[in-house]
Image (cartoon, helix red, strand yellow):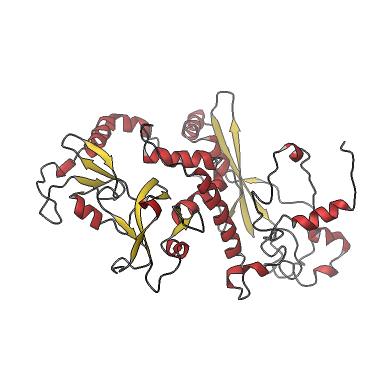
Length: 416
């Protein structure tokens, strides 16, 4: 039997919360082997009653401790804890917690230490007495990387040599008094496409204007980038994609986003209400948070790349990339994901389901609901020329020409 936990969250007027958990046994899935001697379609009329694991505590001191502990957790996290959790084993009995001092009170005694360590990291730290670069032992160490874990202080040449595989890292320059922002481009780093890191390109061509923009999770970066035009070179977009850089345009790309930032924003939209505008401007703050430096505006390009990225992910997960006839042969609805809870004959229904007794047929009923958004007519509608459809009829929205042909059969109707 599968046991589930149900946690009840109580919130009083003072803002304090208390949590109480109960456990119950759920019915076996039709896909799983049934117990011996039990008919799959003989369903009890009632579910087992909810059973508490242990008695409620009448000790007011214990309840106060529980409320104080829960007060440190935000409500959204508490709601996450109330989710019905599939427990493979019997639930463990609640163990009494030993009284401990509040963690934030412990931190307050160490706050001065934390602050001093932050200030130390703003300076040169134990590299303050280094006279020469620890790598080449020739020049003064004046540049360090903000994104590398070791934050070692190197000379400009060694810094560039160590960042050919991480060209979007942010670096700082020690001017004798403090660290000021600089870029790897300013110190001579050039990204070479079309070849491995240890290979030399005999015919490199700089990007148009030698001003290429890369959007990454740590900011918006102006870089120097070379395309390869050797006899065996691929076209520019392929060279960028093989370097895990997504081009903003098909012809003469001057902007790209790393696969990392596209994947990160794609996942973020599942759990966060942050818009693409807010996300992009947060990247701008990661680049410069003072507001005194002009940052390249690639917001529209970012929107376009995100939309294309999601479309490619949908096609990839639907297996369309392995079709020898190509993506354009995708049939209507072939990219749609079927609901795993809805009954699908031959997929998630047991054999003989269509011969079930009448009293149990409701188990295999398909429930469908229709809804409409009558306010969409108030929205500003784009056009196919300005905003072309990328997956007409491939997933959940029908193909527009067939949709309009269907509407034409009903003629004009007066809106209510």
